[in-house]
Image (tube, rainbow, N blue to C red; front, top):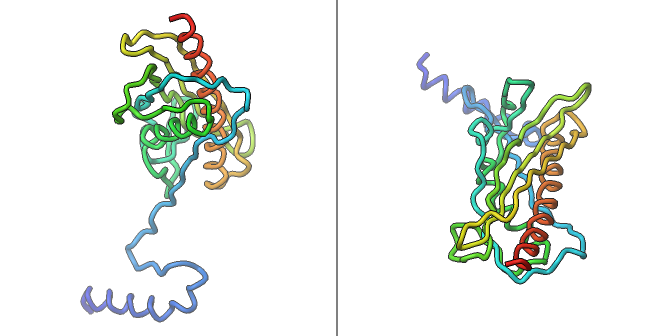
Length: 213
């Protein structure tokens, strides 16, 4: 029997079983691995109404990040060892995925009218340069892992590029379960807490610098 006839028979068996498999998912042919599951994180949408309303503009630079975690694969660390969850990815590399979320979080705060990414034509009064220092799952003493997100940043007055403030913000959120959706949800929660604090710090630091300039 030739390989071609084997392949045709496999296809015929698969197609014939479609009514039985309709509730179980797509039919998978021999040698065809299922695509990895994709997960995403979201911008922060809720902020205190007491945030200062600023009149200056802001440009957000592309975040820098360690190459070990700047991958679409979902990282998990234990001590000095780094591994990646099988059959699961982010929708993009963390730096590319998170950059627009920072901009969207500032927009969602309704405290600043002009905020854009660096590739835009906006010439901001300030530039925010973020660095993603941690974006991985970590083991806990028992039970599900926690998602750890750490972001440092510096705010520069433009066009002099004078640094007016630096910060580091980290949050850890324990997953509600050991499955991938629960772990991804913990990442989303931890990142949301970091983004909220980053927006608050940037607005306050920029206002202080504007008042003294």
